[in-house]
Amino acid sequence: MLIFRQLFDPQSSTYTYLLGDDRSREAVLIDPVFEQARRDAALLNELGLKLVASVETHVHADHVTSAWLLKRQFGSAITLGRASRAEGADRYLDHGDTVRFGSRFLTARATPGHTDGCMTYVLDDESMAFTGDCLLIRGSGRTDFQQGDPRVMYRSVHTQLFTLPERCLLYPAHDYRGLTVTSVAEERRFNPRLGGEIGEDDFAGYMTNLNLPHPKQIDVAVPANLRCGRKDGAVDALDAQDWAQLTYTFAGIWELAPQAFEDVAARVQLVDVREPAEYSGPLGHIRGARLIPLGELVGRSRELAQDRPIVTVCRSGARSAQAVVILQKSGYREVANLSGGMLRWRASGYPVEGGE
Image (cartoon, rainbow, N blue to C red; front, side, top):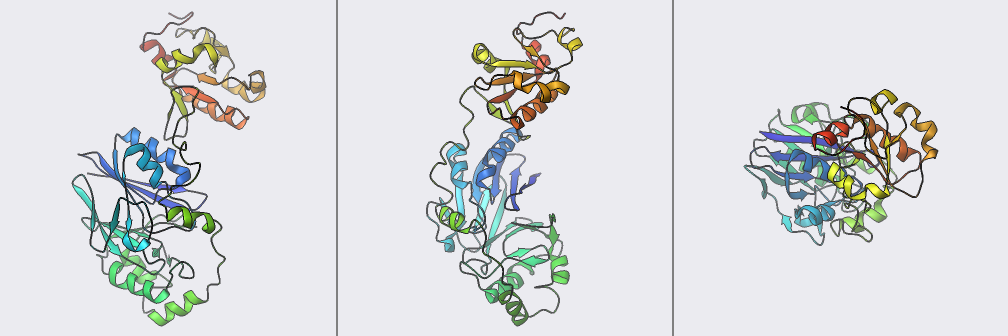
């Protein structure tokens, strides 16, 4: 079975795609974003997947890739088209090459026109294709910078994408309207730039007269992506906060396990966000915990010191996860949730005050 997730970066409107093989647990990430590296790492860890490769559809102009960061953490290969002219990749792909993850694979199809190095990746059974900035949903990528050429793009779409089975689902690198997926049949018929009876001259004339502003991040993104995402100051981007042995969940919450809390208990502020009856109820509470019910936390957050880390706890870890969010919005940076709450704490055999 294929494991598939479509992930989104709101800043650049970029889609990142995770594909995994259920049996081997090997996976690839297509077009990962630098600022989302921690999110993607958390998802891989939670799903128990081994990242074998990050795969770029092209050298992006609107965001920096996290390929180098992911390689640093997971040992994954950096993979992209040979014509990209990028430095530091582990593998450069030509038309027809495959990228394998377990028993599954992607086939690279050269689809230049947006850039010379643009690649579309087609799943082994041709049920899915990842088109980068070549073919978008009811649109296309730009052809007015880098090595853009509208006539080359027109031929790429018609010879490499529209020749796929009509049922093949197409997943672009971007969408700015909230659309997520299309199909070969739909784009052949409805794409206003490339579908129907539209010819090469029609498309070239249309693209030449778009008069769009350049991407805001182009001066930063292109040089960084020509180095596969390696840039100054990137070394600690995937590392946990250094005040405790923390993990980062796909939900975006820093957490620490009961045994990790024991190591830092003497120097943190422990905040129990349950109701008073729960605090003194059957589960008891952890010694030294300060009771501030979740409903009062916004108004009482200034009672907590700014110069000491905060750990939040509740019955199961759900309310205390929300407490982390509240405290971060209130300006506290070093905040984490006690994983599993009092239920896990007691089940692990750690001491409590009160309770049964």
